[in-house]
Image (cartoon, rainbow, N blue to C red):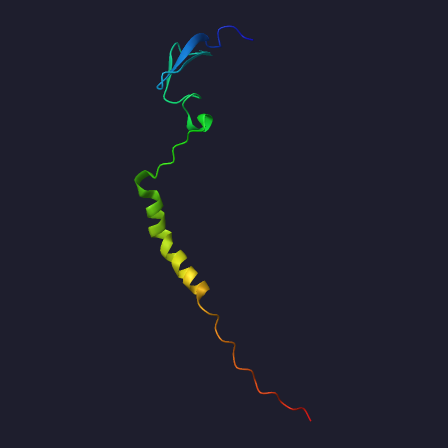
Length: 91
């Protein structure tokens, strides 16, 4: 490896917003993060499902009417078949 082209690595403690700290190595002398493996919903299994700003209602308003129309069309009885042509005797 060439000299004087690689950054220096420091042993640092990462500080999370949840209060968790863990050691690592970095080119920065101090690391502060908002989410870590101890508090991230994917890793903890405590995922909070929130309907932010009424997304479900917005979806239902946008696409719900189309689904209702399609459902009523499916429930409607099928159109009566066209009248059969009279049988022609081939003599």
